[in-house]
Image (cartoon, rainbow, N blue to C red; front, side):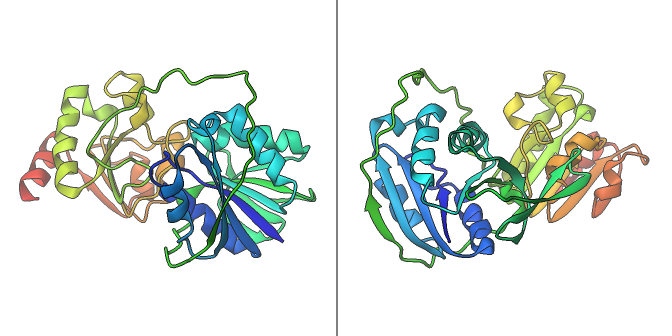
Length: 308
């Protein structure tokens, strides 16, 4: 039984999501190989070779994989995947884009967003906004799986896998890269941040998020938001945490002025420690919080900032 893990990277560095997908693969058992598909991505392959439990790293280094277009990557994974028992990728924007295409080409059903491995063919995944957990068993010869990385801990970088280049060029020719519009910030990305402070509708406007940013800078934290704050135009949608935003599980999550709608809780309730600041004592967020402060955020946050 050999498992293929698809690496998440930007051609320069391996993303921590890959460490967590390898952890899920380790729970399944068997040999683990990692595919690094990109352009000039040798440094990524070297990082992937250090992941504990990985026996081999396959490198598909070609211009057609530079931007990991789903059409090209889907063809590559489907072609290579025929020789594996399991194919795993992170349930990220990239993973959700290419892996269903690979599953369709392999004529198997994809299992999405797993949070637990029960056996080599049985997995747990959330549904109904995380309020119910389904146990799914697959009889397909090849299991194609996306992993909710917030549910797994990263593996150590203590390995020394072999690195092998493969000459497999899959250019579908039906899509092309135009440009990327990325938010540039010195703060950590929400998906990898150890601490996140998020604001909701209670922030009242976008300018007030500067209060959270000041606290975040002192804590080395990422800044997030609820969908209500995003829909109100306070902040851009790449800051959204929740069922239709980013799924996060930091060591500390501070929810400020967030009522705690079911959709938001689905995106952060696996955080190790949850702190809620809200002036409404009946806010649902207090039901999941480890620490709750019933207070006006416009008094509590400046005080917190001064004490920090």
